[in-house]
Length: 424
Image (cartoon, rainbow, N blue to C red; front, side):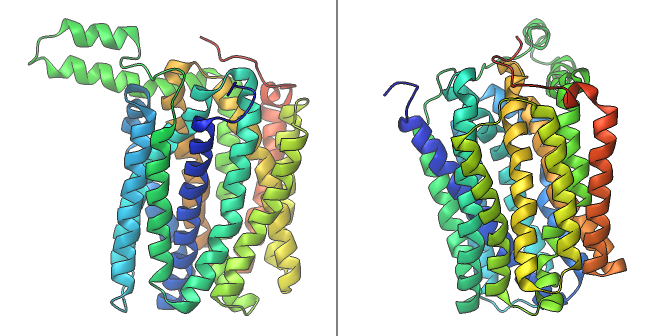
């Protein structure tokens, strides 16, 4: 099969992306319902997001270097296996009739650690198996797999939780296990380099075995190179940090269990469909992008999509109608999918191959901060203002962020098309 079509590596990657996303969505939907049933406190929903995010933040200096130094398919497989183990642990705890959320948070930390290593390696793989010219094609199809998982995962979780609270965690473990196995069949065209920066490699070679301090310093400098590279590139800094601050304030999804229960009057099944509404909206938009890719005015489209995300978030926060909330979730997720597509294509193409894992590890922390840390921010705000007030305020802040970036990052705003190759 030529690069113009599908092949075993692409098929295996798509299966891994779908199952990895489905595992996360099945788990987080069930966790939101279970934790809110146990405590009825918005702050605990925020702490759930913090537990998911903490490993990525604490391990960022290691995860990117691991993705660049070792076989990315193996790193992805091991990370997914850790997620499967966390799912089995959650199932075992759910079977005991839990009364405390602390063990749940501990198991979520295990899940987050697996995902911290899996995310940068998996996100770097598309650029390793197709050329730069084909990357937008693969990115759009990868996004379709992700969005289908966002639809399927919450719906499955809602129905399974209504039958037995143990069942969704078993499904989570099964999806993660499939992801762990399928990625082994991905065959990168270019292997990740075993040594990265010439300076760091020379330093390691020049010291004696007991001179651990220079080696450690060289590896720390190597690990920080992803962050330094982002800081030197206004386009990368703008694109990556935009997602951080926009979704950090607009993290309405974290409060959906409270909104569904207290404002819309629905249970686990209704919550599952409400989460799935986001996947439906995102999938429709992603399919449209796959048929007609975004090739011009890339920067402006990115900033405008963030603004639409903020507007739809405000509508969600104000709504007492399930139908309107469903539509708002579809719209905000559709807008977010445009942002995700642009960043997922732009960032790898603007990054050299030997730094890609480290740059994407930093981006993964930013994404985690925008989603999981944003969930914590939403949980705190929800505890103080109520779920509706926190969501409306977050949506307004997201619109202000988009306006600020329009003025502050002209290099990002004026990006007209994707680069054909990453700089070397």
